[in-house]
Image (cartoon, rainbow, N blue to C red; front, side, top):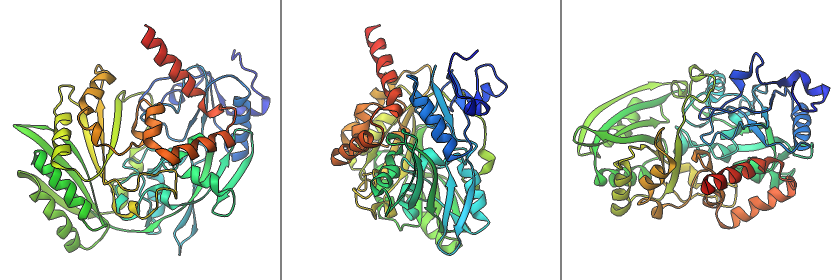
Length: 444
């Protein structure tokens, strides 16, 4: 039936094509796949057994915590998927320090809901259905980035299953090189099954929606304003066409429960545009933004091609290039995320996420039937201003995007960690599949 020599000890973890749970587990948020088998381990030891068995085959191996990665590499065609959704515990270890232990298969909406009971929060992306493991080991930009920093900045320890089957705890004193890799490049070294992370005390936040008509000068003013703003303000936005021109729709988050403070930080945003179209603000819990109501299955429902650029504060020239991209005939969906603030506190070499001098990220997305070439054309004028990329928001990861994500000595060290911890390239077999597919398209 299966054609795979699966050990009996893994049999009760396996979901096969055509099985009852198959349709719910075969795909990701952005892609539809048909792996040979999906394995659902429940412990780190079972993850180790699944990984060593998969490593003994010649099949591509995918690891899935939530399945929200835009590249769709948490599943594959004809290979093995190790799905961590059964490892979903959220435990508060120390209320005084805010130290929590999160298993990799938990969703951030569940985490936010659990931590809210103790007045705590972790900046963790912007959607509650995203899995802990992928985001907390790649970077972690969220609604509180300028206040909290990146999620990886607060990872203190982790349990990692290595491709040779060892289960290793890493922290500042034990396997510190491995911890460095976990904090931004974990997919290069192993499967993280749980992490210990510092949460911040936070019960109530200010949430504002501000919409303005925009032009290049607006975007430059916005970039300069947010870069200089107090850390308790994080502003993300969408840039798109409106009647007669561009519209910038901002979601501003203030990490403060004082209405006067919220008003003080939000109201100036309305003055940045050529005209204010709307402004409203309210106080609420962090779970209003990262909610367990977001939980859903993934069945390839949002096919798209996405790329991103990390940028310094916009100049008049780069702002014009951003406008050119946003108004390109391909009709891209364009998002802006304010960075800086607490994200600047760490040195570039402290984690494998090295981009500590950038102020914003922009993502460009096109949807079918638009091809990736249209996306590339839309970002072409802006790309020369880029200082790097965030690999999790890239649909087509390759050597170029690796070098943009892990520049210079950081990239050299990540490759060294790959050689040390995964010398046989078990976790990189998907790279070979992607290269073969790209080569076939080029020949065809």
